Image 1 (cartoon, rainbow, N blue to C red):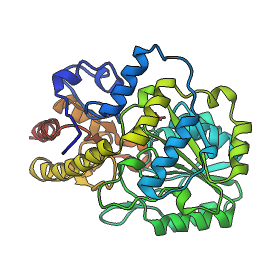
Image 2: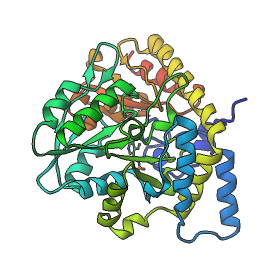
Image 3: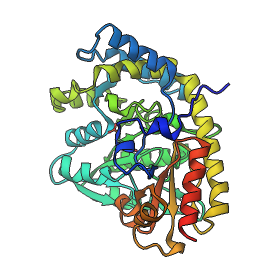
Image 4: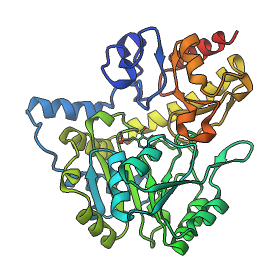
Length: 382
Ligand SMILES: Cc1ncc(COP(=O)(O)O)c(C=O)c1O
């Protein structure tokens, strides 16, 4: 039986979060990565109980590492040491401060576009390092890693870190174990430290094999930054985790990351993360089954209403990367769809140069709302 409860547009419009406040009431928001489902009941109960006991002080985040270790082991067979878990407020804070701690001024960080836009700004404006882009390669059906490009750029002396998005945002791709092993080998050969943003990892679809990077790179020091925030829709509660597979690396991060950052996790976020990781798997299973069937529905709806959009079937999470170039809607088709369909999407060009002519759609909603979104977009083109 599905544990997932959909909310209708009237209910959703009562929310005060970014997704629902940024646009006029006649716009259906399908942009920022928030989901339209009712909160997982065990998390809602834990939060209500915390409020009832006025338990709103500072986080005591040790329990988060233990809970993540339980989740990592049961979900993926990933054996991590809770002593190597550093809770922080959110994934981007974790990524930015990890990069500052493990690289030096003048060094460069490799990323792969198209990618979550703050990857560029976090490297440049937060960590003050240079970005080197090794774009993903399109093989006719999917985007994948350019392993030759990575080998070439890793060989540059200034490259000391690789910020990898796994599963990938915006394409929804999950990298194979063989690809991750190859990355680990190249990183070790060239002395590059891999920082894997695994925020979308719990949402790999049924039948898709997801490998946590640290489980692949077991004997080579590396970092994962992960959170329950996307998969259980609790980003506003603020709790993410930096994880390493090496005590020396953990010690270095603990020493170099400012204390206020290491105490930045929210108490309600930490409570919610513990419940998500330890009691939230039945709800998560319902979620990923639904997301996978939404991806199926999306493909059918596109064939019917928007056949010129090239759609890459995601393997995880709820983001779809649409190539709109055959429709001649300019560099940023999100502008057209907002104006003429009253649907808010993310602008492709913000994901890097290869995003020109693309949009990103968030389909973490009900089949009815997804149908309305695609129908509106199709009608706008007639
Ligand atoms: C790949 C990726 N990393 C980080 C974030 C932001 O996470 P946080 O709010 O924990 O910083 C997102 C949000 O959608 C994301 O998709």
